[in-house]
Image (cartoon, rainbow, N blue to C red; front, side, top):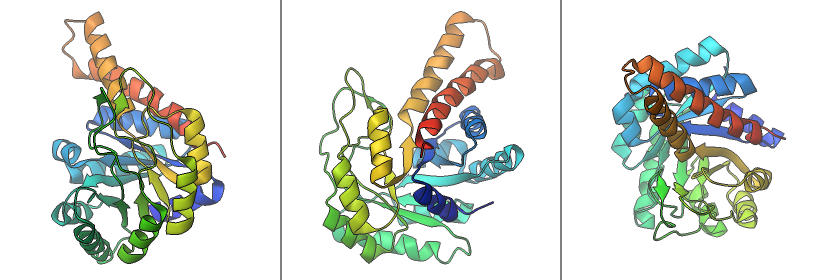
Length: 283
């Protein structure tokens, strides 16, 4: 199987984006895997610090690789939004393919220093582990929102170029109008497509779009054309999962078999992920 780096390189050459979906449970993992198989594209499975604590990061690595081999589709594990070097180290030691150090709340010098430390440690792993940095601020939680998160700050192209050069990150997640989570009663903000293009040219590393839930199809396609190579989806998956479980229990209130209840959740996640993968893989 190709490495994640090779898969990203292929996506850049083809002008498509790789779908990145977060999971907390095995049924959601299977739903995303089946979506990737149906579309015939690689996929990245993300787990935040909280999701890793719930699922188990070593268990997630084993499960993803096992399912990937079974269905014959490349699947990779990413340690999403990691806030300390120690947690980055733990994830790399557990066998992930990529890790994000999120230092967006730290002073610039500290953010750069820890990111460099993560890059150096990844280089000692004996594997091709990618390190992603993040610049700007788009909020912190994948949930339904009443308003745009406070303190949203866009990424400047020169800042992105300086950061990528100084830290040596393999990928960069900029703030370009995207937010974590989905607004409840209105559409999410539009993406700044020109800014994406400027950052891509200046930083010259693959770009990752976080906070993909709630973004319009047109903006996704324009963002990919401008230089986005990976797109994160989490809130949409969580909402599909929750609604499926609630609907099942509403229809069958006496059902206590988890594999009945979660089978509906798996199918809802598959449907949501497959829709996105088909869009992202348009050339």
